[in-house]
Length: 380
Image (cartoon, rainbow, N blue to C red; front, side, top):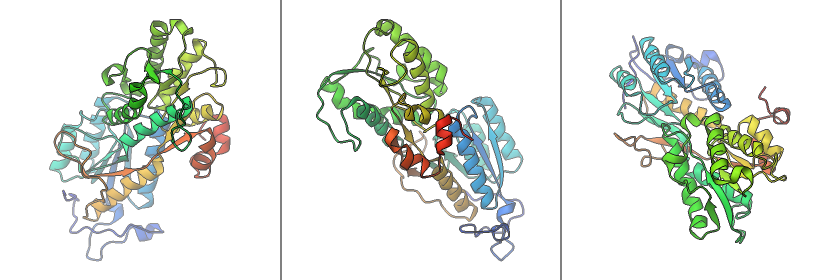
């Protein structure tokens, strides 16, 4: 583990866990060591165009500040050079720890190697940073399992699985299309592989058919997870494969709620219906964005995958606190996430499938969204 290069610091060891006041948070280790308020954590988030990343940034910042740290939170609006500049500036301004959710996981090697030279630990947040030794820890969800759950959501909606993911015995043959996430996001292939491995038995025995035949990641990926890009591809598929909307399409595997909304817009415009009851195909999703949760409640989008960003933020803060105290963060996976240079020690969290009958228990009762926000489809 790289030590934190704190100006004037003679020792580390900050008693942060369980602190209940700002005076407690600034307690030193008793021998003139660094205190929480002496440490700046730079937090680099990819974009403010997604509700999910706004929630992540807010959660990480608030929890770090509660622990007593100074926080420099920056959003790069999906602009890679801007994120590079933001990280350069954080390092120049004296950040002691970096938490980075990258736009492109291969584009930050120069910045992070500069951080390594200065002894600054780097925590990759939800998106693995590739091609560099200079990433110390990774906090994320079990991304392969998230993909499995995306496929299970689709299979539930199509009737092949029940709500507990048990086989229903349905033998009907149905037609689907598949979408994947952004090719520059390390998570996207994990999602896609988990989903396609889960769908494979149904594709192999002929119960499912991909109408267009497009089933490789490079073809079905969606750069920057962009809603408009997904809508355009769905429109093109409807035109080329489904005779402008006159041929049946039963479901679409979608890896993200924004992509789902683009897909649904294209399907609705093509005459498939405005709700599932009216004939709209089953569409999966991810991130439990409020606009899509409302659509699930209204019978438009079938389901989504809920990744509780508050828990992810807590793991990032725990990792930062461990480094601040001169310790190694706790990892529960030391084998899966190879960034091409090293296997990055990771902490993986669990996710949940949300369908209309699970909104109350998973999202409302946990305080993630309120009933009023869901009814309006707008975060407050």
